[in-house]
Length: 107
Image 1 (cartoon, rainbow, N blue to C red):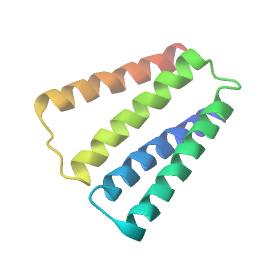
Image 2 (cartoon, one colour; image 1 turned 180 degrees about the vertical axis):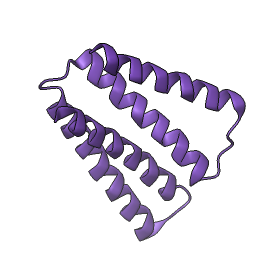
Image 3 (tube, one colour; image 1 turned 90 degrees about the horizontal axis):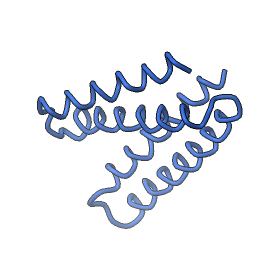
C-alpha cells in the first residue's frame, strides 16, 4: 500500500512542476491560481512521501520519489511544453528509470 502512496507522492511532484510550467509568463489571477496548485501539490507530495516512509526505507523512498518526479517532469516538458527530446536527454532519463526499477527490485 505504501508503494501506491509513494507513487501518488511522485505524481504530486510532477503536478507541481506542471503548475510551475503553466504559471510561467502569466500575471494576475491566473498566475496565482497556478501557484495555488503548485503549493497544494508540493504539500501533498511531501505529506505523502512522509507517509510512505513509515514502512519504506528513506534510502529507497526518496530516490524513487525524486526519480519518478524527474522522469515525469521531463516527459511533461517534452509532451506538454514542447521541450526538445534529444538523444542524450532520453538516454539519461532511461538510465534514471533503470535505477529506480533497480532500487525497487532490491528493497
